[in-house]
Image (cartoon, rainbow, N blue to C red; front, side, top):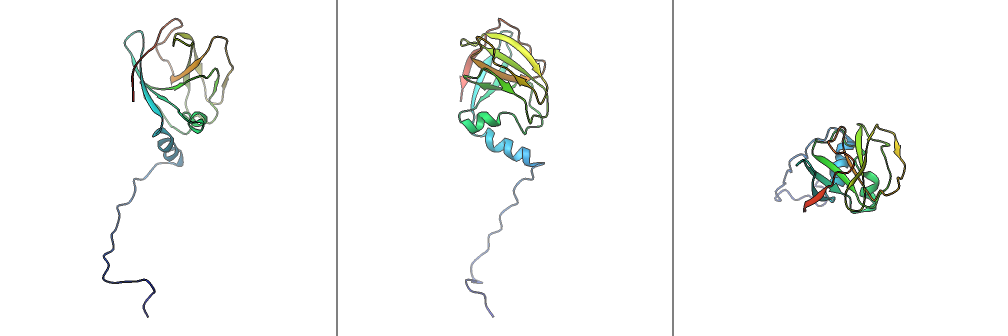
Length: 146
C-alpha cells in the first residue's frame, strides 16, 4: 500500500547536520551577538577594544550572560547606562564607568552575581575583561563603527 503524497521519482535532498554547540548558552550567545552593532574604541595607550553595543532592549538585558569567556580585546559598550549587574555571568569583569565624552570616571572589578549602583556623572558603561589597562582620566575615542 502506498502512502499518500509519496512520489518515488522525486529526489530526496539530504542536508548536512548543523554544527554541534557545546551548550544552550553558546547557542543563545551567538543568537544575540549577531545583531549588536560593533564599534572600535581606541584607548590612551594604543589599545583597541572591539566593543559590541546592544541596540535593542533584549540585547541590553542579555549582555554577556551565557558566554563562557571573552577575549582580551572584547568589550560591551552600554550607552546611557549608569549601573550594571553580573547576575548569571560565569566570569569576573571590569566595569569602566564613563562620562558623556567617554572619559573614564572609575574602573571597578566585579565578580559574578554582583551589582554596581549608579554613580554621579556616569553616562556610559564599558564592560571589559578583568584587569583592563584603563585608569580614571583616560579618554576613549571611537575609531570605527560597523
